[in-house]
Length: 481
Image (cartoon, rainbow, N blue to C red; front, side, top):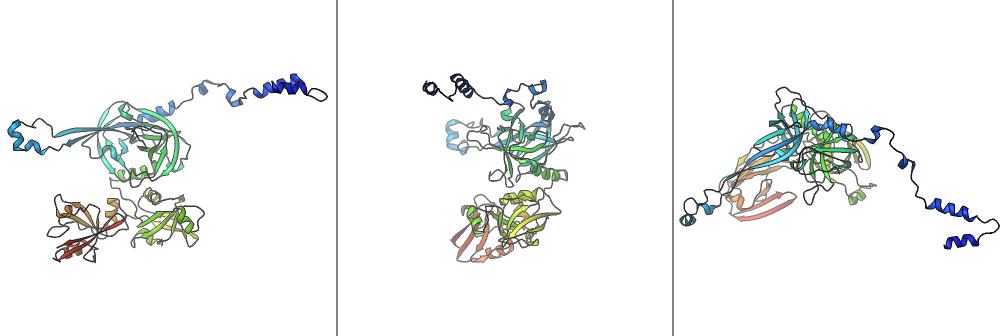
């Protein structure tokens, strides 16, 4: 009302007519809809737009993977105690089973019409029987062609008696961008094949802790238990990832799922088709992520690249002229932000040829060619079980070579003698030695080879002074002989 009063009081020469002003106010108060919001669908195709044609094409190539494992249960010693048998009879505890069958469920993707299927390694790990159920509900026993814990990928084979199966073609995971639409297909909670949609939320996720060579595509497409090993596909129907894990506080989907990129999958498949031996290129390089503080000390405008800490003298990095203090910025034109990024780029290339590393040294950039060669078994591992009267009795040790380090998934720059196994009830177990420990020194002598360690242990000093490397820590022990 106050606005109307002011309009009426303002009438006079040059004043706006009341009717015109009221029309203007009504226009301003009317919600404005864009032309796009007002457009009515012009065709039946626009009304029925959906993912259905894409799902019809892709779903037959996504399978269910069932595993069966016989688990031996520990039997309580009370069942064999004469005291309890005296009061409860000789049949005491006889009816309690010592074995049980453990079943698990996952998903898989047919990638070869001849019956080659990919899934997650954790889906089939330690299983006694594996069954693959196709989209049409037929079931086949499966055998493991290759299982790789470092990438969490396993390749299975089923015998279809010559029948060709529908497959999903691998896409280029490097071509995927954040914001791309994707579909996830699998069998969550064993409810049956399920399709969910979402977008690519992030790329190159490495600090997930799922696998050693983790470099994941992140998506908000709903992924739940049972989806592991299932397909993540793009809108052109290509496989760009194998769903492998979720971030969840309660076990269900919170909109943060992770998939192994198809380019890593391609490298594992190549090894499976070549006989099942997966050998990755070895750089002989260790480095660290560049933080904001490190970037400032290096005079960088932003944190980027991997700072080289050490190189193995016999490694490919050393042969290419890479040294400690160099900053690795790119591998084959792809920016790297952490050591896992370098490992992923090299692992997807396979053995043979070279990789192009963009380095920065003393403020100047240069490109070097790094040969992609397998890790050498140098020195030979010389696996030995240690016996006798000394602190390492009961430990099985070996010479740590680049090849053995790659097998164990540890830093391949490390050298020396590593503990592989500890016998139960042994002296080494009582000293709390663990597999993975590296024997650094014995009585002040640096340990480089198993034979040198064996010679030292044959001596009988009055005391033992040991230095054990465990991860990034050195533990010193002093024991009486």
